[in-house]
Image 1 (cartoon, rainbow, N blue to C red):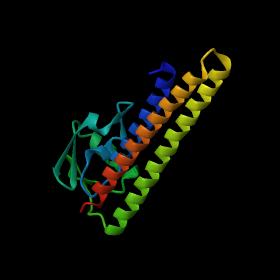
Image 2 (image 1 turned 30 degrees about the vertical axis):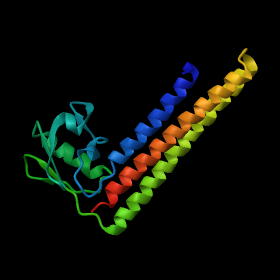
Image 3 (image 1 turned 180 degrees about the vertical axis):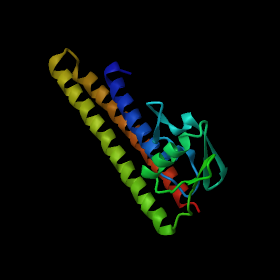
Length: 184
């Protein structure tokens, strides 16, 4: 594969990875420790992920237990969870923090699926924008350097194949996450 096109494939891969990380933060009524991935706490002046300052476990299907390695971190972690967009109030017993995930209503599940589809569509638009940028770059190449029109056409076909591949991946990710949300 042409190294000029390689950079655009990397961008498409990053778009897909970003979508999957966003999907990891969407909770499906079951406890998933990945909802904490985006939460950082101040640990001796350094913003650190909760998983680096505490033991995170899932004792029940709808409960996440966070046991900080230092007692003074309990209040800090609790505050980070309360100010986040998780929408869950932590319970603190002095030694650990428990997050109890409520069962999702049918209406809430449908809202989440709508949100997932919207994020999937945004990812597809991003992939198509990357394709457009790649094609613009190829058109400029055709005017400036001594590359034949056939080579340019082949590279554009390659970019289109990459686009199709990543659009299919996005659709698959949306389908998997939607199915997970709708499964009671």
